[in-house]
Image (cartoon, rainbow, N blue to C red; front, side, top):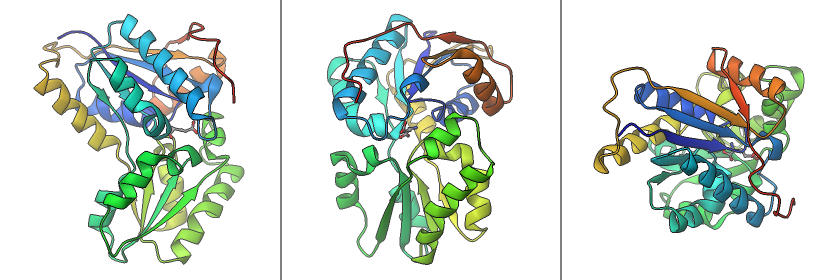
Length: 270
Ligand code: DGL
C-alpha cells in the first residue's frame, strides 16, 4: 500500500529511529514531525504529552499515514495506550531495551539512561517487574541532555560534561551495559561510547523498532510495493532555520522542512 508511515518525536531524537526505518524499508514514504517547539517532553505533565501525541497523530493521519511510529520513549510511556484507543492503524512505540541488555550483560548491572517522564511512568515500572531476576537496574534521568542535542551540540564541552556526569557513576557501580532509553541519546552514541570505553555495551532499540514496524506492515498487508526509493517529508514546531541545519546534519543530506501548522492551542503548557 503506497501510503506513508508517520513518525514523530518531541524533537530530533526520533531521527535515530527514522534512520533505521529508512535503512530497513527504503521504499516506504515517510512523514516526520519534530515537535521541537515543545521539547523536551521529559518533564511535562502526562496530559500535555497525551494532547500533543493525539494532535500530531491526527495531523499524520490527515496526510494519509497508514501506520504511526511513536519515536519517543516518553510519549510512548505516557500516551501510546490513548493513541491505540483512538486510532485503528498500527501504532508502534519505543521501550527501553532492558531485555537485550540483560542478555548481553556479564556483570548483570545495567544502567538505563532516560527522561524523568519515562522512568516515572507505570509502563516503565511494569517493564522492570517483568525483567529478569539477578539483575541490578540503575536508572539515570539525564536533565539537560535533550536540550543540548536539540541545539545541535553533539560533541561540545557542555554536552560532554553532562554525559560524564550521567554515565561515569553507572560504571562505578558496575554497569557494563547502558540502555539508551530516549531516542535522542543514540545521536550521542559516539560520545557516550568514547566516555564509557570499549568494554561497555550500548543498547539502542531503534533497529528493533524498525523490525517491529516491518512485521506489523507485512502482517496487516500495509507494506508498499513501490520499487523506487520512498520520499521523506519533515515538519517542525520550532524555527525552521535552526531545525533545517540540525536535521540535515543528522541525516547527512540537506532536507526540506515545513512549519508544523498550529495543531492545538488548548493544552496546559506545563
Ligand atoms: N526523544 C524523547 C524520548 O525518547 C525525548 C524526550 C524529551 O523530549 O524529553 O524520550
